[in-house]
Length: 182
Ligand SMILES: [Cu+2]
Image 1 (cartoon, rainbow, N blue to C red):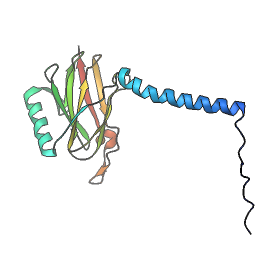
Image 2 (cartoon, protein in one colour):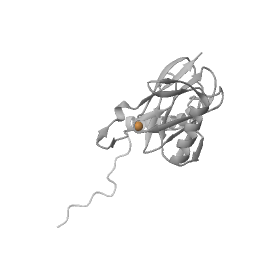
Image 3 (cartoon, rainbow, N blue to C red):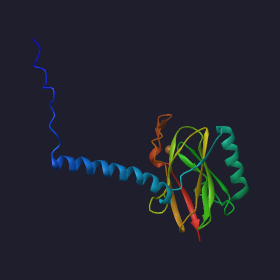
Image 4 (cartoon, rainbow, N blue to C red):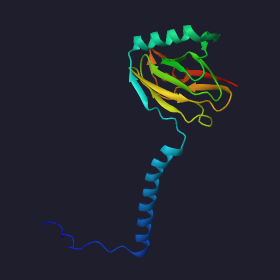
């Protein structure tokens, strides 16, 4: 014995209030969708549009070469490197450090080539100053266009959990530095 089948027309027509709320929800969804396009154009988010393939050996070599050419000092054992204003810079992520420390000039636009030599990391700078938050992947380079708007010392935080190696945990200590001079 089956249950009684539903009536053929079991729904009730929308009441006035329900119709209003459904309309508002649909309109809001449309607004949010359009905001994605608008924000992409005017949100001043420096989204990388340039990417290319690399290998760990290649990127390591390129970064070492960059450090050799433009090193201006050291900070706690890490080279401080000042790329030419408006030029290319290289930043290497590996468990659990950023290499090297970059010294940039305020208002100049740099192309920062980001990659990792082991696993996935995340690149983020203080959000109040920079709108930047990227994945850093081995085998790929993201070219991040960066124009520092103010002088100061900014931490480069790895915001992608980058795990355990040789039974050590170091993700929380993976902080690099970008120094911006006037
Ligand atoms: Cu990391």
